[in-house]
Length: 297
Image (cartoon, rainbow, N blue to C red; front, side, top):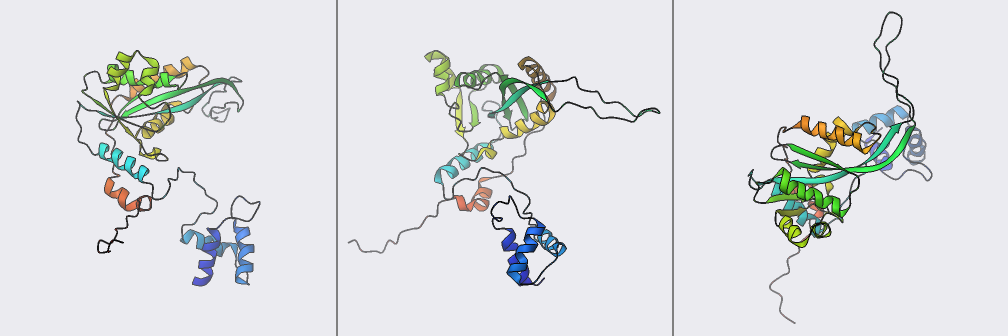
């Protein structure tokens, strides 16, 4: 294939697939390119060209795509990045919070345990039935202090405004009782406001708790900026990726995991405001300066 043929193949592979098809396959591309080029090419040649140009039409990623030239997005983005760049001060700990929903599933049948290989029997992995019993839903509030790597997790049967308010009280009075002010980073969920405090506590207590926090919101469609997502990923991998039949068993497991986790290494957050202005330039509004030498009409 010459350069012109490669360019046409790349353009086709990056375009929408034919109607009724989910994605481009080598066979579909071969049929299409026979029409476009007016001569046949092999699937192996197509495969080599796609690999060389790092194109994988069979792959798709889902991502929160922010709007281009969104001043609200970049305003919140740079605000949170500035918070992450602050030097560590135990009087003003930076804490990120988010929650993860979790289904409660019981075993429909008793799992078959794993066994080692012996002279009479082959080895076997643990076997669980694909069928399970639905026992409801819950969520886990996850908080992480990036500067120390400390992760806190509190299961909750719901994630209402009152449940969120209880997490703020936990941070204020249990996790960081000696802090002068807690710098809190969170997303834009409708319950993630200080109004939740007034829905839960008397006005005096709600006002006290409100003044314990300095709140910074991540951008809309920018949840990846919240370092709490890292804590959720670690907790999910090490603890939550299993079936829990009841809320009590989940709560026991999460409590044990948090106790064993303790304080790990600080989070090495390297994405800075300078990086954002370079790599996410399309999200920044284009400022056109008006000429100052125009005569007034």
